[in-house]
Structure formats: structure tokens, C-alpha cells
Length: 163
Image (cartoon, rainbow, N blue to C red; front, side, top):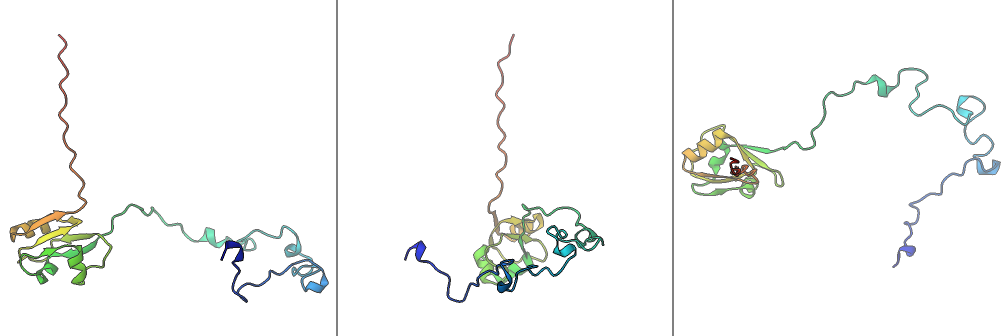
């Protein structure tokens, strides 16, 4: 099969109505515009015109502000929900999805609501300070994925003293 062999399925396409092509076409003479009047003229009126009434597009209020396309949206999990994992287990996005706490394919943030009783190894995209403290206090460890690297302080080269 080649590109020039492709055809639409039979009955899926209708021929367009040819307007103004004689009385036998059913759309001849006035071409479906009726007799005289503004609508019968070539210019008619513009799209959205409401007869002089304030158009809908101008009546409704415009929304304030803007929508940030770079906003980070996280699936939020409180540390109280992490008590379902066994001591010493590794808690990452896959484990949380299997436990039904988050849906797959979204970044995760751990928040500090509740108490932490288990020693867990937690891998997450973001974490609050209170959650990090609670996990480390219980003997666990926290790894933040995709964490922005700290700006390494470059030692300023000392310029030779001009004497």
C-alpha cells in the first residue's frame, strides 16, 4: 500500500454543499441567505456581534493573575502514613505507589504530620524539615532525589599585590 492508495472509509465523508451554483442545486439564486437585508449582503456582520448589545466576551470578567507553567505539584504523604512499612524497609516512589499512598508518575513530598515510630530509609523528591527531623530521630535516613546542588563556593583567586 502506498500513500496515493489511501482513501477514506466508504460513507465516512460527504461531498460539500456547492452554494450559488444554479437553481437545480437547491442552493442557487440567493444561496440560502433569504431575501434582502443585512444578512443577505456580502459583509453582513462580524462574528460575535449581538445586535449592539455588549458582547459576551466583553461582559464576563477577566481572571486576575496568571498560571505559572513551571509550578511544581507534589503528591503529599504525611509521616503518619509511613507506619505501615516494616522497620528497616526502603520507602521510595515505587513502594508508596504499591501501598496505594500515591499515584505513579508524580513527584512526592513527605510532610511531618503525625509521629514516626519506625526506622526507615526514605527516598523522596522533597521533604519538610519537621519530617526529616522525625525520620532521623527515629533512626532512619533521608535521601532527596533531584536536589539542587549547593553552589560550590569558588575560592577567589588572590590578585598579586601591585607594589
